[in-house]
Amino acid sequence: MMKQILFAGVIGLFLTLIGTPLLIKLLARKGYGQYIRDDGPREHASKRGTPTMGGIAFILATVAAYFLSKVITGYTPSYSGLLVLGLMVGMGMVGFLDDYIKIVKRRSLGLRAKAKMAGQLIVGIAFAVLSLQFADARGQTPASTKLSFITDFGWTIGPVLFVVWALFMILAMSNGVNLTDGLDGLATGASVLVFGAYTFIGVWQFQESCANGETLTNPNACFEVRDPLDLAVVSSALMGACLGFLWWNTSPAKIFMGDTGSLALGGVLAGLAICSRTELLLAILGGLFVLITMSVVIQVGSFRLTGKRVFRMAPLQHHFELKGWSEVLVVVRFWIIQGICVIVGLGLFYAGWAAEK
Image 1 (cartoon, rainbow, N blue to C red):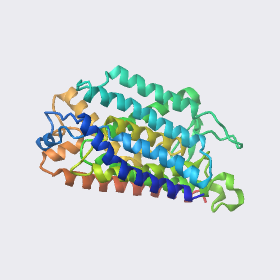
Image 2 (tube, helix red, strand yellow):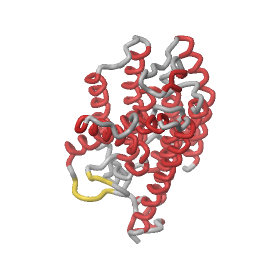
Image 3 (cartoon, helix red, strand yellow):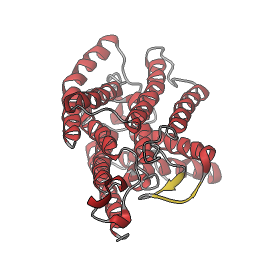
Image 4 (cartoon, helix red, strand yellow):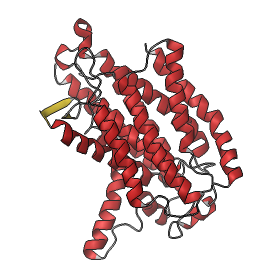
């Protein structure tokens, strides 16, 4: 069964390694280049015209890798896996419309704010509602109406509040990844680390699933997750696809992911957290995205309240660029921060499981 994870990762990596340069040529031929803000770091001016909408590459590669791994190994897709992939594709389509209008129609703001939010809400609500359906033989649905950290805890919040909570997670992570996607390879590399963590979490939850009964290492701390192994397959496919894309997206980037990619990655991270019952843990595993989002909140809040800015520019990565750090230095150091967040998150995940003995 573990072969699915290996096949998904390798196929995802291969497809983006060979597919991304083909997409670059296609986008360049059509003149679909990136718009660059005039108030940003001067060094970014050279990026104007670089092909964008690169998220298409890893979205298609992830979906193909997932289904090809099923065909090769003979296993059937799960509802959890399909829902998380559906969330990724749906959010990617909203981002694609935004990019398309911004670049092809030459309207710098892209989709109007209400239209963009409406698209995200439709996709998010559809995911949230469907994730409470499709119970298995043990009564487990892809998502749970309880809040979760390492596992579910507390009281049931009910389906309506769950939909609101799921929407908040999806919108928060989508915007977090979108804000992080400002430097070559930053958001892609950070996402690879989080997908690696969710591959491990899925495998561990599968081995220690309550459905395994007598084979459990720790019977007092089994995991009630509907399809943990399939979530690991999705995570592995994403990790491989993003790694292959990073080859072309790292400095100097030959292509940008655009809103197509950033909204898809944020959505799929939220979906993985919801379906693996690690909702609040995502704030630690994806700590860099949270940190960068908070820098924008602080900057806007401070300016409106006091008329003063805390940072030279928000999001945070541009603040350090304006302080004189090179783009590569910012990216590598932020990757290190993200790596620390993943190590801490996985440590808490294991400690929470071990503490139940």
